Length: 381
Image (cartoon, rainbow, N blue to C red; front, side, top):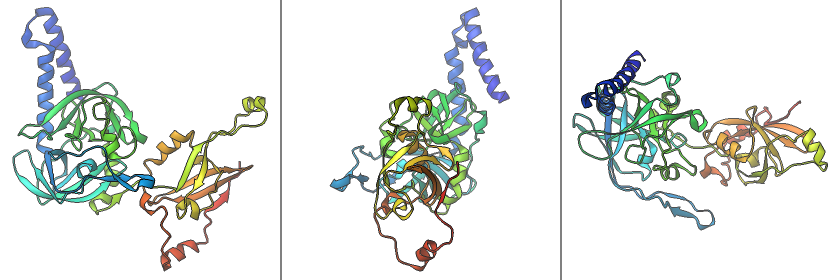
């Protein structure tokens, strides 16, 4: 932090010198460019180029039409990654492997090339972990997330343009703890060619890993926002939280309840009563999908979801945002209102692909269903 303040002081001194002496050599722009080059050089040894070969254009669920090809076209070309451990582990964005490529190669700052293996993907945070058979790789320095401040300089770095030198886009930290607390937001230029690269401060320390998280509808939908001036980088603490699962080869998917929701329009028959005693905010269940966690629990059509794990859900968009970073396999507790009663309903989330599939009749599932622990219990106000 002291070094950071020193460099900022140098920038201010340069501006003052230009005003007093008019000497172009000490211009603010020249000093700022020197700081940017030095910061980029600091992170450069850990910055890698990722190239992929093969794979098909991704498809998405088209509803009654069945699977349809994504409208966002994934082009061939290099992308970016960052060494996260010296024994050959590299963190990048899952966007870079949306086509499920057959071959992955990594080029290091010193020109070495290695074939990489995709270990695991996190579709919630848009991260991926790959492995190369290399040792003693240079690791970057990271900024503790509690040291970040809105308004400080931020640089988006990448190697997706080819060539021997990384490229950099200068911006600022425009917001903190965005996307359910997973990411820092920046207005530096973030695009498919630097997804998986680092967002760094003026000392060359990594603030986070650049990923497409703007908008909704998955990684490719987020990529459409790349020219909007809204970019996101995943904090180190969030990477650490899923690192072991990715290294073990796990794919982390969004968890689903298996319901169709609609805004709640509840009101009493007496408008004045609504003003004196406003009804609790919530989201109404319009439909419970067959063979889903919801259908196997005590959730019913017409139930009003008030809270997740004890925290109020708010309106429909707030509930969807809160659920967007909960992974399949996690168990959540929904507080619902049914007529005059409140209930706590325990739900184990599943991937979207499992919605509509009848459960397998095996000993494990039967044992789980015969558990003495109830999945629903009354709530006392």
